[in-house]
Image (tube, rainbow, N blue to C red; front, side, top):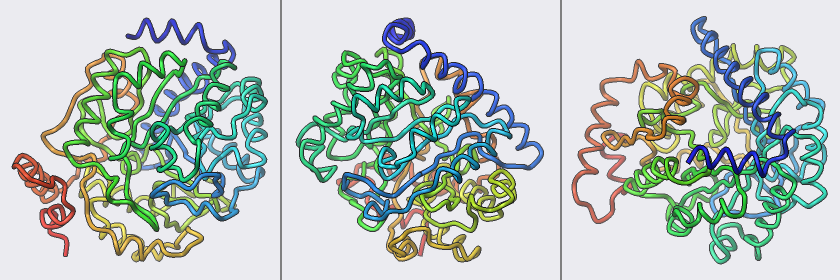
Length: 433
C-alpha cells in the first residue's frame, strides 16, 4: 500500500507543492507538536493546529449545518495575518481554513500567499475552484484543498440543498488534480451516504481519479436544525472505524481520522488541547460545534497569550476530559451548559439561539464506545499517532464514575436491541436529569 501511494503521489503531485507539504506540514508540523508537548509540561496550552472559519457565507444549504450561512460575517485580512503571524512565533505552521465556503472570502488567496512558510488545508465544497483558481493555488504551493463529497448524484443534491452538486464538485476536484495539487476528499458519514461512500470501490474510484487522501468523519446532529435521522448508530460508528483501519493497510490512498489514537482509544482534539477553533467573527471557541466564547483574536495581547491564559478553554478541556473520551457536546450537553453559564460566555452565532439549541439536545453516543477499540494495523499510522497524535495524557484524571458509566454503556450495547443508540437509553445510562 505505502510504496504504491508514494509512487503515484510523486508522479501526480506538483514537485513544489509536494516540497511545501513535506517541509511546512511534515517536518515543521512535527516540531510544532514537540513544542506543544513542552508547553504542556509547563502548564501552558496553545494548540499546535488552529482551525479558522474565515467567514459564514456559503453557496450551499446542507442538511444539519450549524453555520449561519446566510450571514456576511468574515475575518478581515489584516486580522487573519496578525493571528497567523503570532501563531508562527510560537512554532505553528499548519492551519485549517473553514467556512461557510472559504473560497467565497475575497482575500483567501492573498492570505495563503502571505505565508509561504505555513501550510493550509482548505475545507471546501469545491464548487468555486475553477481552472484559474486551481492554477493560482499551484503557484502559491502551500495549500491542500479538502473537498467535501456527501454522496453520489441523488444523495448529494438532497444533502447539500442544490442541484448538480456532485457533478460540480467533481469538476472542482479534477481542476485541483490537473494542476498537481495534493488534494483530499472529505465525507461526513451519515445514514444517507454510508452505503455509497464507506466502500472499497469508492476509494478505488478516488485513487483512479487521482485523489491523494480521504477524511471520514461522522455526522454530528447539532445546530438550529439538527437532523437526528442522519446520525449513525453505535454499531455503525464501530463499522466506520474498522473500515478506516482495514483500508489503510489495503488501498493506496492516505486516510485521516481525528478521534482515535494508535491503540484505537477514543479522544477529542479539543479535550487534548491539540486544536481549538476561531469563528467567523474572530471568537475563540473550544471547537467548531461549541459556539460560545469569552475571548477574541482581536485581543491586543495576541492569540498566543489570549489562548494560553483562557480559563474558559482550560475548564472546557479539563471538565470534558474528566467525564468522557468522546464528544462532550453529544454525550454531556449539560456539562457544556454548565461551563457556558459559569463563565458567562457569549453566544457567537448570528442567530442568537445557541443556548436554546443546547438545552434542547438529548444525550447521544459519540466515538467513545468502551470495549470496541480497533488498534491501528499499518505501522505508519501506529508510529505517527503514537508520537504526534494521541491523548497527551489529557484523560489521566478521567473519573471512576465516568468509566463505570462507560462500562454500563458498553454492556448495554452488547445486548440485542431493536434500536441501538436510542438517545433515551444513553440519557438513562449517564444518569442525566
